[in-house]
Amino acid sequence: MRIVFVNLHGNEFLVKTLNKFIFKQSVAIKHKYILDYLLSRDDVEVCSYINQRGLSLSYTTRNRFLQSFRFLDHRVTMKKNDIPLKSITVLKSEDEIRHDDIVILYQLFGAQMDFKKRPDAFLAISQLHFTVNQAEVMKALDPDLMYNESNMQKRFIAFDEYFGWFKKQYLVIPFVFAERFKVIKPFADRQNKAVSVGTVTYPEYLVKYYGHNCLQPARKQVYDNAKELTPWVDCFNSDYLEDAKLSKSSKHDNKVTKVFKRLHDKLFVGQQKKYYSFDMVEKFNDYKMCVVGEEIIGLPGIGFVEGMACGCAYIGQTVGYYEDYGMKEGVHYIGYDGTLDDLKAKISYYQQPEHQQELETIAKTGCDFVRSHFNGKAAAETLLNNLLDAQRRWLAEHPETAK
Image 1 (cartoon, rainbow, N blue to C red):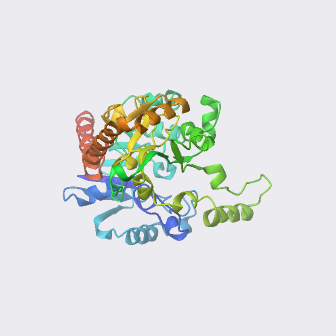
Image 2: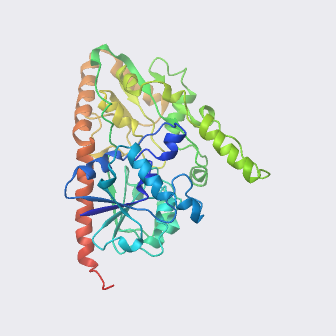
Image 3: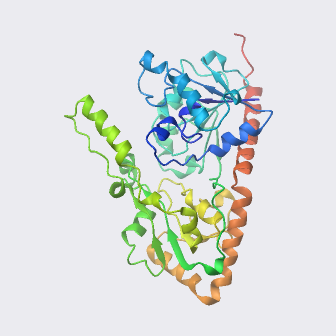
């Protein structure tokens, strides 16, 4: 079987991209486990279709001379990621995509969707780092399946406004913890309170639906009330606007000034150096409980899986996010209603000596569940099997036409 990615070398969710190496930026390769699993399978041929906008350092340009370096970009990136060139089949033309291929696109990278015509193959789109961008392009491509770490089809209040045309299968895949997240300190030796982590960001498109542009209001309320919460929570959240100040653009900026500001931001700001200065694994292991405020559009943060993998009892909102993964409140995690009062009340309850055994049981049960179900191999295998099942149905309904 063949799995075809588009511009694999420029997908920062699958590999560390060239610009991350050049500018020495922190990177979280969130779906690396998928690529690793596929490359480990002898029956899977991993392909990368490198299209006309495949230069990872400048997707926007269509300059033929600059784009002629896109194949070199691929080779250098694979080498730096320790991926043998022979393990990736490079496709240089749309016509090389076969009817029985599974083509995987990532919505966040619009350049991946630059096709002359829709590929005659099963097409799946990941909505990792959900955005409403590319909705019209996606509609034209008519994907056969979409997937994300939450079912945005039922979670995001404006999904129908942008993606109402999509009536096909929507998969929920779990967040996956990196192997470095593990239990290294006994539960009894940890601080008897919660640690709060995660970045607060502000995408403008939210204003239309929520009256504000804060994507993680649950994190922001902890961040804004850190001193008040000290008896219950130690806050290590990062506010992107405060911790990663970017150069403000102006309509009067010429092209040279704009390029300089972007370069300045890449080199000197926008990297949240303070937030990334501490070891997250050690931080989770210092506490019995953890809080990772959810996104208002319907997504938990990946930190909840990482904290649970480190043996923390996770505290999350009881809005159904975690049940989508098969978790149960009071068994795998501690539920609260999203208010500071209830957060303090729940932590206070479990801080009491008579509830310490109950707290440790939840932490262990949650840790065992995460390590069994949210590890890379298990999650990637489940995703591939789901894609293959959906593709089989698609092939039965879409016989190949003569070319």
